[in-house]
Length: 351
Picture 1 (cartoon, rainbow, N blue to C red):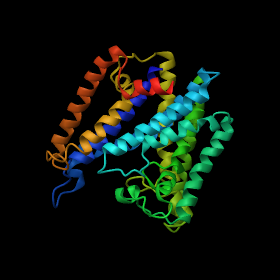
Picture 2: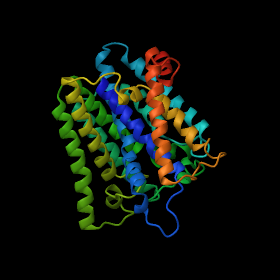
Picture 3: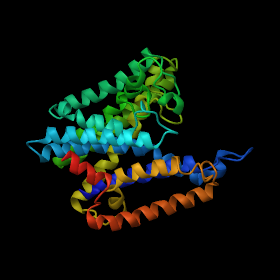
């Protein structure tokens, strides 16, 4: 389904531009306003939807795979999940300035969710929706119980020396912990079943409901003004960056993602996107691009002085150049089925 591949391409596009923007730009000069570099700042803000889209699409793909394989799906899901988890730890090893062995990033989360999907895929849509909500509410309950900081820094999200160690990071306090980010994966599974049934309106309603939950909860919390460290304050907080993620943040981001999935799936069913479309080309190599760009621009830029060393204009130019090069090279690579890449390895080892 080229439409879904194109959305993976959009997700990796947004992730790359956000990471490069943060890692290359030296920031605003002394005495200048953030608005002085508004094109880069606005472009960078769009990247917040990248990981939620990856996670939700992983749920969509899991549901479609399970529907397409009446037998043997459980084994494939477990193997693919474990391979994705291994890729997550490979990324951890290649990026020591960002992650520790206990870090839990988007690949770890998707690998865990896919491997455990053998438990979720037999549930009804209603049960999946209830479980997704319970996961998100449970995340806030655990954050409140263990007094998770209201703002998590990179150092805190990689520190496994505290109580609970790496399990605390994996479940609550790393970049994309199981609580609450398993919730969007489960919503993606419901969306995948709707795509298989050509019920695209159902996905749109699900997205609208998530936005109402997140936005409405935030609005009510502003009127009531609960304590920031209390359950309600944590549940509906919206702040710059989403670590730790609140129900409001997850609802708004995933709601928007589901609306995009509904529209693209509906359009693709009527007028299929070409497999040579630039976003499709990027989407079919998205896992490889994720594994390449993070160590390249997080680690390799430091010795050559590019880390936080570029102006806004130069940063935008480098982002554009890298993405255009990625489209061209992946387009050539597509001719041999992306042989040797991370996706190819995932299919070979995962089935």
